[in-house]
Image (cartoon, rainbow, N blue to C red):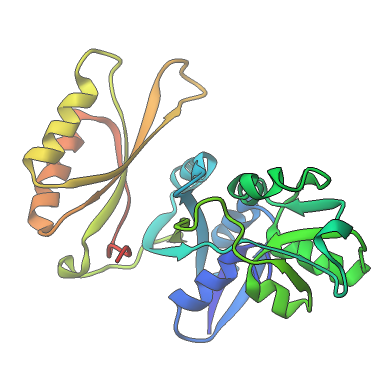
Length: 274
């Protein structure tokens, strides 16, 4: 049985991804923060971790890039989950009865348009979507709503007041599978890579790297900059690339290792997007 660390509890999106990605039976290590998730991996309390890394509406979860890089975690897979946000409460309540809705900031951001139509509801940021659902049931909180998955409503016996209230229906979150030491995969199974590097602060340095990717037939699917706290006005770049031939990627990797500073492979794995 694989031990999987997730951010959140049963019914959370991380739990759904863990169930879908790992076909075998799993045991959950439920963490209320990404920092504690990483610590559980470093302490070898778990085999793998599931971490959200970006959302198609709200953008990147930037601190998680640094967590992966700074703790030398390896990305060994990815999973794209279509996000369904549902407003739920205790049974026998209506939307007009709800005075407050607690949820993760990302979830609240994804449902802004819906709540503009219900200005009587106060939105309050919380740690986790499913944990709020559990709290409502456990403490029998009247007049309080949660934004969470349909699975959470079922697990905690809550009534769904409104289905799929995310502003954009085609809303997906990308999750990465991480572990302290990456598994060795056959080159033929690898079609995506996540890399990190730094560049000199001079004209054309980033353009030169991007030209290498293009010349080697790599498709740039993500680029994210993150400031280096210890060196003002210097940035680390996190890049995801996909490719058809591992040989093309290997060539680009060798060139970038020479051109860039602090070049680091965060993971080589199978492209998870359909």
